[in-house]
Image (cartoon, one colour):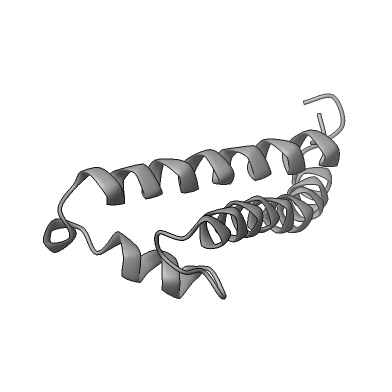
Length: 90
């Protein structure tokens, strides 16, 4: 069975958005000296600024778009390899 691009794209986008929200919550709850979440998110997400409303929204959108990108690249690669390595009917 081949993967459905739309399903994987939406799944990855929502998964990474949810993960981003968990990272922000973790960064707000745990003391800065124990995690470095601010530095990580500012490095991973272009133009992200910690603890601003605009930065939060931008990070959420960027996280979703990273998931979309991953899905758009992963599905064709997976489907191509599956079609070459697995005979029909498996």
